[in-house]
Image (cartoon, rainbow, N blue to C red; front, side, top):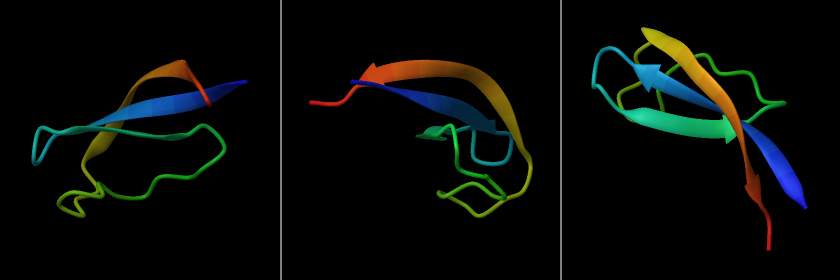
Length: 47
């Protein structure tokens, strides 16, 4: 089974993070900054 994920980049702490495509992102989970942008949508397999 493949799940779609959105990968975001935080301008403040320069970290990337991924969330399930159906989730709304309001801030970076690392530094809680709202200075984030969507990098790309990908997929991964769930085992």
